[in-house]
Image (cartoon, rainbow, N blue to C red; front, side, top):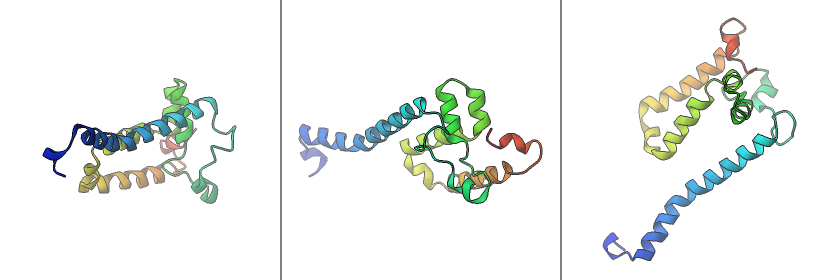
Amino acid sequence: MSNAEKTPQTAKEDRILRLLPGAVLLFCGATGLLFLYFHPPGTTRWLPQCLFYRLTGFYCAGCGSTRALYAALHGDFAASLRSNLLLFPLLALLCGLFWKPRLALRPWIAVTVPALLVLYGILRNLPMYPFLLLAPH
């Protein structure tokens, strides 16, 4: 059926189907944030410790993200940045990629973002100042 042949009802159904994944993602994210608001990290088994950290003893690029979100939800942005400095820039990037998924196909994004995550993961494990500041607190 071409666009000219679509009825208003069919067009409305198509629009709902296009918006449904975003609505489900938004609902799940809001539910997760609400749960996190009332359950501090480290007090529940529903928020497990990082598997990479448990296996290796090294921080990954995501270590401290749950604590950073918890602190941000409670308005403590300094503690949030101390837990994971890259969390909010990466969340902004993910929102942008959700909005415009074709951006992920651009070579500078496809190479730069993973390289930045690997570099951040390495630097936050170096036992010297100023890299100690990158480790989650």
